[in-house]
Structure formats: structure tokens, C-alpha cells
Image (tube, rainbow, N blue to C red; front, top):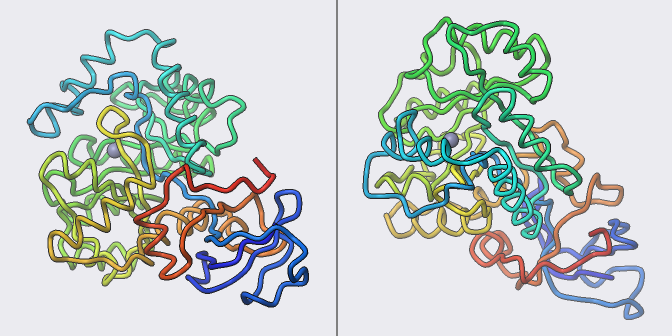
Length: 355
Ligand SMILES: [Zn+2]
């Protein structure tokens, strides 16, 4: 099969054809120059690395509800609605809900998800079980329950996770953050946290100890964004989740500062874990609010930057021998980043034979 149209990958968006054999990329070039002129099935479309959902809380998928009009802390905070609903559910119900959320992402072509998993070691193990056998990379950032941190619990947690993901510097004191980051890094794993979501925090509070990933920065100033960009720490934004609480990060400022952007769908309780919907909303809300953001920046955040962050650069470039399989979408190839960001749906995914 030959897909003629455009490629959007780590090298940007450009007109191209891509030839597949048994689901693998075997040729990429300028449209009209392929080796099989006219002898192979040919479709028009866009080829891209698989998207990644870079921030989720899949654990609350079983509590999916219309969120009441209330502050974020009353919905997903420690004493909030989310934890009251979750307390009434069995581990089996949570596992089933997490598995359906993962299956939905697989249907939308998502190649990897980075989940902030609450509920300590058992919570992380539950997500591992829920993901068993599914064709999606599940990276778990867990959270030990006991405070002060108990090293035994943290060691067990780091054994079953890819690192630690905590609420925020406002909710975890400096000693806790220091020990979590130190132990995670010593184990070769990640340390991540939410930052400047409800109120602005000073970069010093969330950049020390050095995190591997930040989430939100909704209230960050332009100076804060530049500091984060210079530190080369990627930021996962969740614009639909922010919108539920009347917040709207200006992603054109993130782009201007040169922030390494990632895209996440946040709490599965609030929004379906769809990267397609997330990028569309990010683009449209930017236009609506008068701070338009370049669709290439958003496409990169969903389809390219995660693979660089996950240290799998071979999945970020559509080329012969590419690691994993790319995504093919039956979309018009004109302005391909715009098409990807605003029009992609699972119904437009073309099977390549790798699925
Ligand atoms: Zn979050």
C-alpha cells in the first residue's frame, strides 16, 4: 500500500508518499516518485508517528460523571468528589474501567500513555493488570501513600512503576519532594508533578528538585515559561480539563517561550482520554480566545515530542525501519498539521497491516 499526501513527524510537516509492506514502512519520498508507479493500492492521506496521551489519571475512569460547577479541589482534591466516589468502588470495577479507557486509546491509535496513578503500590499494580496484553505503552507514575515517606513503601512502588508523580509542591513539603525525587532518580526512574494549576507557584518550588515532567502551568507567567523552557523540562497541558474550571492556558506563549509541549487528557472522570479531542479543543479555544496557536506546535506535542521524552526517538520519525508502526489517517494532505489537529478521528484510521 502507498499513502500519498503528507508526513508529519520530528522533521515537521511536508508533502510525501509512504510505502508499506506488511505494516512496515519501506519507502518514503516526494509524491509521484515511488518505485511502484501505479501497481500498488494507493490512498490519499497523512502518515504520522502515533500520538501519546502524556497525562492521565485513569484510576478515576470508574467515577465518570458530569462535574458539578465547583472549584477543582472540591472535585478531584484529596477530600473531593472523586475520592468519595472511588471509595465506593471495588478494585475489580476500577480495573475494568481503566481497561476500557486504555482500549479506547488503542482504538484511537494512541501508542503510549503516561498515567499519574494514585492509591500507592496496589493502585500501580491494578493499572499494570488492566493494561495486560494491550498494544499500548503504559508508563505509570505512582504515589506512595504514607507521610512521612516510608522508604520500604517507596522502594516497592519504584519496582512496579516508571517513577513518581505527585500532586504539587503546595501539597507535598520540600523534604517529601526531595526524598521522592532522589530515590526515583537513583532507581533510574522519573519524578513528576503538577505545577501552577490553580494559582501561580514560583518556578523554584517546582524546579527543585529537578522534575522530569511538569503538568499544567496554567497560571505560569511568561517569565516562568521561559525558565521552564530553558531548563528543557517538558510540560503536559490538559486544556479540556482546565476549561471545566474556567481556566485556559495561552499555548501561544508556551510556543513563544520554546516550551517542550506534551498533551494529556487528565482525569478520566472528567473527560474521555482522547488525544484527538484534546488537540482540537486546544486549537479552537486558542482561536476563540484570541491567542491562536500554531497547529504544527500542537501536532508536535501530541505526535512527536512524547517519543523524544520517552527516549524512543525511533518512533518519532516516519522512515524505513521506523520503530513501531505509524498512524495513517485518511485526511486531506493540504495543511497537514491543521488536518491532524482538528479533523483526526478513529474512523479515519487506515489499517496498515501492523494492527
Ligand atoms: Zn493531573
